[in-house]
Image (cartoon, rainbow over the protein chains, first blue to last red):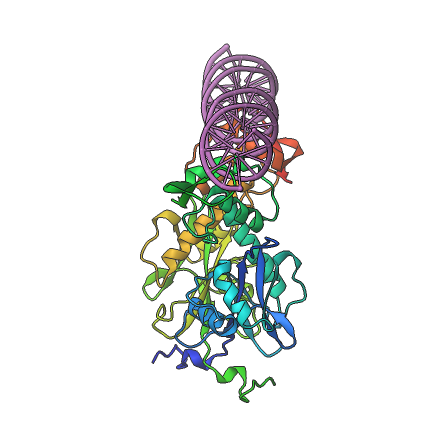
Amino acid sequence: MYRDSSGKALTDYPRPSVAVDTAVLTVPPVEASLDVVLVRADGGWALPGTFLHEGETLAQAVRRSLVEKVGLSDRSPHQLQVFDDPERDDRGWVLSAAHVDVVPWGELAPVLEARPDDVVHRPCDEVRGLAFDHDTIVRLAAEHVRARYRERPDPAGLVHEPFTLRELRVVHQAVLGRLPRSADTFRRAMLPLLTEVPGVREGTVGKPAQLYRRS
Amino acid sequence: MYRDSSGKALTDYPRPSVAVDTAVLTVPPVEASLDVVLVRADGGWALPGTFLHEGETLAQAVRRSLVEKVGLSDRSPHQLQVFDDPERDDRGWVLSAAHVDVVPWGELAPVLEARPDDVVHRPCDEVRGLAFDHDTIVRLAAEHVRARYRERPDPAGLVHEPFTLRELRVVHQAVLGRLPRSADTFRRAMLPLLTEVPGVREGTVGKPAQLYRRS
DNA sequence: GTAATAGTGTCTATGAGACACTATGCG
DNA sequence: CGCATAGTGTCTCATAGACACTATTAC
């Protein structure tokens, strides 16, 4: 057991509790917009979160909180920022590591149906009045994801491969919020980052579209 | 005092120690490169750091560590990322919040002279074998700062205002590491982000240069 | 004068973005 | 056939980057 120069262990000093809070983002099929998942907490709404347990990484704590509070498994959250105001939580000294995770609607829909009273989704740009500094986390998370979507084709995998350019464009417009790039400009911006896959999308109206995957 | 549903306080649960580690970056006048400040630790070299104290924010802990370990005051660090591997510190369960801070050489030179055996600087791209995950923090910090210098004129204030375009370009080349943009291209990229200040730099060889400040 | 640096006029290559046109499926 | 969507040829405009030239100081 480690002792420092004054004979004390690390646990002899004051330590904060460490929490994780996660903005789970998705794009619902109708009213396509970038939405965040909220869970019921003390009569209001909050982001799913939990306290970090011993021996856990932050990512593991996030995954555990998403299983418990939302019902989502096998997620891959990204760290955003630590919120460290000593007064931010009136229960005591709590640091919160904010995370973001983007989940395809197909995985989220079943859990929303399972707990409709305790788990909801709202457009990121409209949520206000969440607990703690969760409003700020939602802003950060949305900006983080939008920045990545400006650079690469569907980096979070919201659409299943293979996909058509139209399917990709619909998701990008939903994430970025109605930035109406014309279809051909979008195509030329994305093509260098995609790989053509044999086959076309059939059963739709109009000319069948070539299938692609991210490369 | 807050108690949860099982009657326990937050401090009844296991909590990690929380540390901060900071990559202090600067550009020395000769051999212009992006350098990081290292301090002596257990026979090797490490980034300056400390444990978070009760009631402190992370930024305050960083400032305290820079005063104690380096001798720098009034700094404005930026958060980078939390390192959370439960095994990363063999003294126990320690999370580290990595930070970056950019310091003008003029503020750093006196403290380097004051403690030449315990505080040194090395080019970011050459440091290896630091304690813990500090090598990774240096990489992250350098990339963070370089990304900001690609966007704006001297965002960290390494050169004192007012400055000439030549002085600005020398610093940018040092930070970005010999990306030889021609002088006039650099000028035209920066001019929209600068404000002309009355007066020119005198006493140098060649035509005196217009002075500017960031706008 | 010469050397050295500051600053500008202008050319070219590249890319974004939009429009208009062609191509190909369905009913 | 008509309609809707996929995909392309091409035009325009803005920008990066470079070269060549002029301007202004010190010596």
